[in-house]
Length: 201
Length: 196
Image (cartoon, rainbow over all chains, first blue to last red; front, side):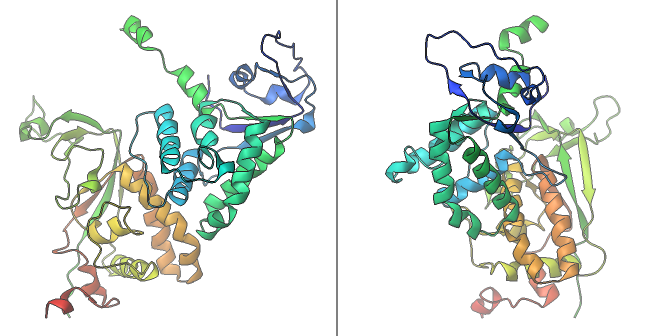
């Protein structure tokens, strides 16, 4: 399974109520087929029947020859949020998500709308492939707007372009939508579980 | 003025794997059969007063590598030292800055220890890469082509080093910031003058 470098933003989706059977979604002939299969698996709690071609936006995580990755973006953003605080080296993507979210949460003293911290949900869950529902998208969109001035002020164009891209992504899904980035999800599926390693040995 | 040039090159090692802990004998650097020095083994050198430089690596430990990339920034002229001096001026580098627990100022590791024989870890390289990106627009605004050429070259080198470890393989500076003396662009400021 190949790693996905796309962040998918969808709108016109409904979150399935708990206990309801999974809705059959016909993807043939629709742009939904462009979504990586492991990403669709992650969206099993969502009803995608009404998603039209215009309701899907794909954002390249690593655009062009001059790559700027989600990890680099988040680490730079962290330096803005918690000034001078650097991330310790960590062993995998999951630990990285936890570490960065924990630093933000522990800093505390955020305004009420920022909840556990600005961008906290994005740091903690997005890279893991957890879908961000419309409520989370709206919260993150507000975070992006609130921190826009600071993000622009460091004059790092690569960073700020990425910032604008993500803002647009969450804006796209802020109403009846969902954003998913199955990067680490695909990665974690690729690596065999410990018991399988033993079997191979 | 006599000019001493710290000739050397930068090397980035990739695919590092620890083979022996610090204190292992030098024989671990040799081939067990031929007794020759193994090309793909290095012993990590740190900066005693600045352990953060090699963060994530075991100083004194022996590591093997799978790939390397060499980059010569020293072309027989003073260009590289001029680049460092201009970089320091651009960011208004604090020459007095010492090892602190906070995040160091922009390019601190490169300016202060970049001409020392030591291994710079990917952790520090990631910090420097942010510095290069943060300052690129302002560096470009100076419209100094020679400076920007080295800015991009060293930036790319640092970017590579985020996936490996960077080493200055050359004659080290006798003391930090000695490049100022060579270029004459930056006064010793608070350094030597204070001691008089």
